[in-house]
Image (cartoon, rainbow, N blue to C red; front, side, top):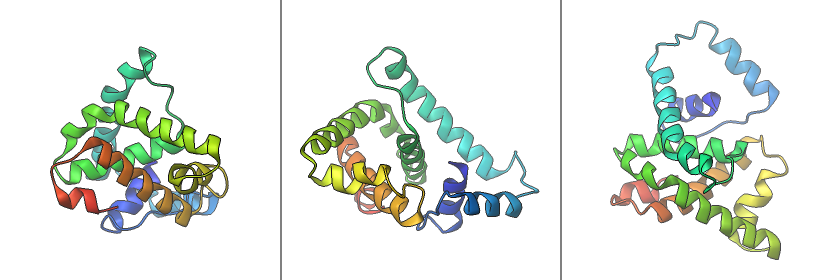
Length: 160
């Protein structure tokens, strides 16, 4: 997840990267002298704290199923974006928005058609570590989640 956050931040918010072994190895060697007190590290910690606070109660009380890997990735990237636009208060509604998103994926998966299946569900199964797949899946996830969260800024709604 940190690799994806760094890729996004290093590209100015425009690009992600693949998370295959080669990219992980490259990232590791590029950041051998990584400072755990750096701004990037603190940002990642802040994002994880927001996610923990907003989702742990819903998961603990049984209102929300456990978060799976691809959801964690996209939630982390979404919160990073919310922070970029001073919209972190929207994170309060993440659990209900995620539950609605999941219901849509489940419905489309059962029908084996629909945007939530084609643009997200299928992309969590094959080639899910590839850059293009992650970017396509995240754009769909972010667009749908932002629509559910209903931010007041048009700039936030139109960016991936």
